[in-house]
Every structure is written in C-alpha cells, then in structure tokens.
Length: 137
Image (cartoon, rainbow, N blue to C red; front, side):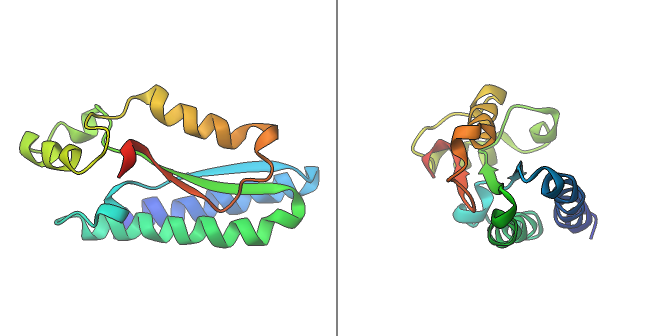
C-alpha cells in the first residue's frame, strides 16, 4: 500500500496542486516518472510496475484535461539508475533487465535529466501525454 500511496497518490496530489498554479498562468509543464518495469512486465515487480502503469494512465488523462490551459503532461521511464535504491537488488536481476534493453547499461542522472529537460522546454509545447522509456526497451 505504501508504494501506491507514494507513487500514485503522491503524483496525483503534486499534479493537482501544481496544475492549480499553472492554470492561473495559462502555462506549465508536469513531468511524471514511470519505469521500464511497465513495458518489460518484470517478474516480481507487480506492485511497483502497476503503480507506475497507473502514473502513465494519469499522465495521459491529465494531458487531455490540462492542455486547454497550456499545460503539458509527460512521463519519463528510466532504466535502473545506480543509486542506493538498487543496492539491495541482486546483480543478476539487474543484469537480466539490462540484457532486455537495446542499450545495455544503467541509466545515469544526466540521461534522465535530458528527457525531463526536453519536456520542460517552451518549444516542447506540442508534446503531451507521452511516455519516453530510456534504454530502448
């Protein structure tokens, strides 16, 4: 339940409150975070992947609802990033994920930031409701 509260409810509440401010300005960008665990349907990740699938659905629905206000809503789906979060994951499991990607390496913070930055650019005002998965999964 904590995973859903953090990922789904947290993303919804932040989006809702941010959108209130953005509507007043008639401009805004919301970038949510998904994961490659959604399209890869990773075994053992049912709760985590389904919570992120809910975020993808939220992203697409909010993109429709908020576009009249000049607000775009998109999502980044990273591969595993070398952080403390994955320290407890067996190396074989991480390698199995990487082996399913076109680019077989861990993501870096700049990899993720690059996609988020693209979504945040004023020139990206015609891009909404999209999910970009990193690593070519």
